[in-house]
Length: 250
Image: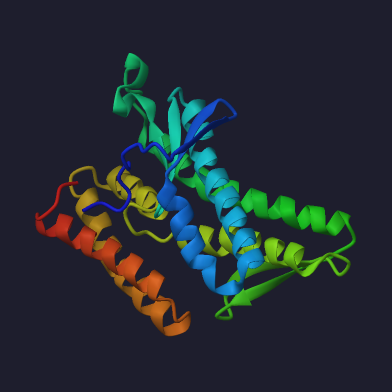
């Protein structure tokens, strides 16, 4: 089972393009987003769904545009577990050939997603600052930096939108850089290990993925009371363990 595989097309998919990149939104994306925000009232839920949609789209667009930089077309899928930027040639669309990428290029592509989110957060803070709002920096658990921005003259829902956008794009952007495969940080770690040890790099990256997945799962439950974080990273760590033990393929 792979939580990050391409879901099949449905008649309820939303299809459009951004910067020339095809985007498909699977209906489960909206379902999961609604479930996440469903306890905060209708208006807050709609704000959260909008912020979630924009943030994931920008993240995947970062990957896609960096792929284009290296000659690889792609399309974006937003699905129940987030999103994917999928190389076009891997699915045979248009009959294009696959584009061989160096490990360093793959690292840049992996990092482009989280850093696109960081850029979005910086733009949000810049807009708040220009409009006369308050911009500062807080911390999570005393050491994870998260920007804070507030418009005193704005309605509460606007400030909720600002806060959610910053939280998703900074905090979850940093979480996504954890060296757990197949998250972006795990992709980067794997490439770095292979660069340092072409013969045993994948195994070393999987060991790190198992250990980090377990630690983040426990930390998410203990410090954030997040069952979602615990289940997600526990499952990802278990997947890496399966691959490490030969039960899976890598």
